[in-house]
Length: 293
Image 1: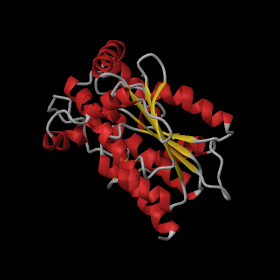
Image 2 (image 1 turned 180 degrees about the vertical axis):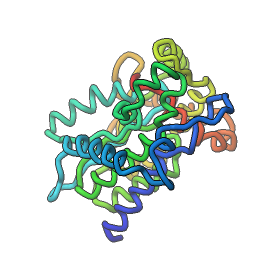
Image 3 (image 1 turned 90 degrees about the vertical axis):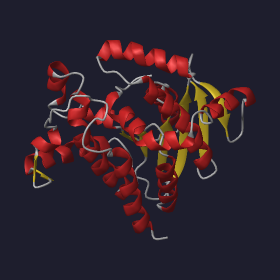
Image 4 (image 1 turned 30 degrees about the horizontal axis):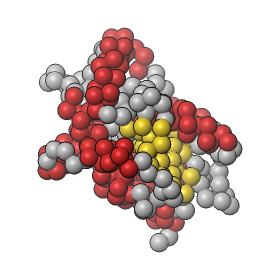
């Protein structure tokens, strides 16, 4: 399969994973509102001034990663249910491993990109509950532009998401492999009661709330995604993040009892019900969750 074709397909897949529709489905208000994408587009195209801002943001992030013209670039996929400790895992163990191996990887994370949008700080003061929603679509577009540049320059990157959409991740892994990437997966996990408690504590700090059903759904969908892709990637590690990173499973090791509890999350609830709201669950993680454990 031609690498150029794989590159284009890979970009489309990540773009779909980043973009989740026009508005936050958990905001109950029916009043229409203008997000930053609506503010800065004319005929579905961003204004030249806004496009320059996007290119500037992308350039600054992409410059942090090194190109791999000879060896294979690395795609690091970090997943886990809501409030499972994904960002803590990334900022700690993952970054230490990258530093040890002298690998410079760019980060693709809509939450991080939101902070780079000029209006975001103002929204946090005037409309904190919808601040993330008001910049979500634009942050996704910036993320897609960033991915396109990183893949075209064969640069390593980290993508942090819920791993709630199994089919999307299967296709992504296949296309990354076809484009010559080495694929590494990290999954963060905690018991549901811990995740719910963390989500409540975070809501008190930020004013943004993730519904309990969304927390449950994201945690139930992750095991199925990992099982579907673990034999298609180069390496994977699952960590218990309740008291810090404790290895649960990898290609060389498995804590049978703890990994069984992780898998059983995916066996709860009706499959049809989970599939029906998988999109909402993944969207909620992108839109409502601030970075953090």
